[in-house]
Length: 250
Image 1: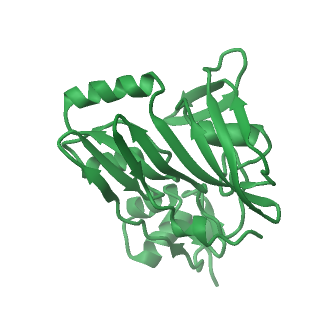
Image 2: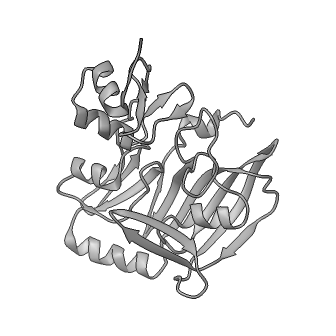
């Protein structure tokens, strides 16, 4: 007969790892039971539960020279996790934990200052790809201010016309199958969770987004990818992960 115990303890026994390592895997969104992601490490679960643990892909260097480093961040790593792999470089832009794609680092303080000015002046081209719920058949320009509230190390954003900061996203249809769409999103600003909030606001929530979008079985991440970034004379592109190219729209 099976009893109950906290999910991270059951996982630790199954994988023969420490409790803290098991808790970290659950917090990263890497643990599933069947098709459901385990989200609460301290939640009670049957002690004979069989978990699946997803492996995190490696961070790949796209390009580097004396001034800049561009990498392709896999999902399930935070921007800080990636930064630790390049201790001599200075982080220029962040991606959410479950978002994959182009991330930039400066190699020198002088280049960092110049690059930050480009970001602040909205002269950096940022192109994303997302899989959304709903049929997107025409271009949509979203000009909606976003307010971000941070508490207990967590950020939550929303459209707020009174207190929000200006944010602009332009959505371009790529293709539609059934009631799902693949879209290109170009953002001029870089508010926290901007694309996720904006797409949900206009009725096209991102698949796999448990906070702002729509969860779907067999999808255990936000289907959002930073595909292309242009800054100064540089242009970097990160190939879409397999779930964007072979994703079954059903």
